[in-house]
Image (cartoon, rainbow, N blue to C red; front, side, top):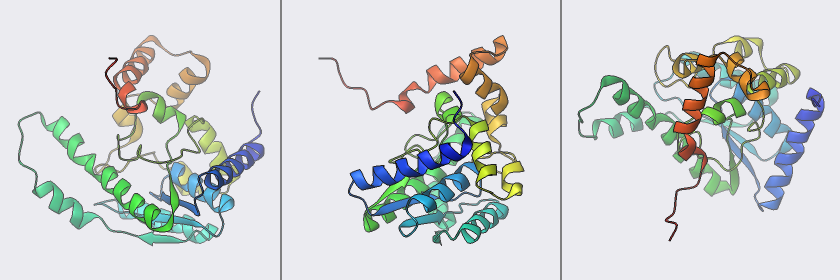
Length: 244
């Protein structure tokens, strides 16, 4: 049975509030990328912990529009936020790494993944200082195929959207009155200029959601999703231990 969107939003808000209380934490901190998922998380967290939530906008050679969209959400919903520019830290770190042999595509991904890991470090700095929980914005669609950076955007304490496919997040965004330009723009992790989620995954969210919710998809899509899920299994598990 499908849960009405208003009830779904209420359930998530109450769940976040309960988790924070049970963890003896004072509030929540989350990244605000200017995308639909992080915007939905920010608004839900504002409802859950109105006086103890902090959004971090963390540009790292990012599209300026993303910062503008993040600030638009923060202002519209009264979310307290800080801007932490990571350009310089990223440049210093990358320039300190020795060159390695390998194809250019894998090198680009390895370097790009430094960005979400720097953001994770920043989030936990504030979380430790404030006794807050770090809230992630990954959804079920992304988690199922490992479309997140291990110890980057996957390095969080709680994921309120983790049981929702992308279509459900869009529905929540409309219900919460997230600005339409954020809902409409192509989802992107902002790893490099022109990068989009669907382009990198090689499948659309619509096809991925359909397979996850009904098990139906074209054979090529099924193979792609199953391959990505199997390859990324380590991302969704604790580190392996010996069996002896």
